[in-house]
Image 1 (spheres, rainbow, N blue to C red):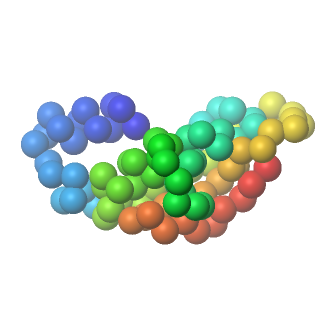
Image 2 (image 1 turned 60 degrees about the vertical axis):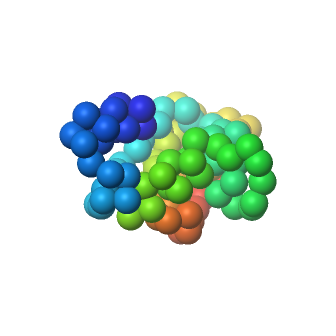
Length: 94
């Protein structure tokens, strides 16, 4: 996400002008940790990185998937979700 933001900044594009879909596939078989998704499913502070990202880029569809091939785990994270303008869809939790 940091590389994406750097590219947007370097291109001189305003965050609200960013449109399209970004696909984020992460390798933690436990899913995206609850701290990173904080604020997506309830209004709380401080906000996690995904809530901050969707607020900064409201016209960007963010698709998150997790690599669960590493085997079973007792994780409590979110395995997959989409978020656009703060609205979560296709949420699968571990």
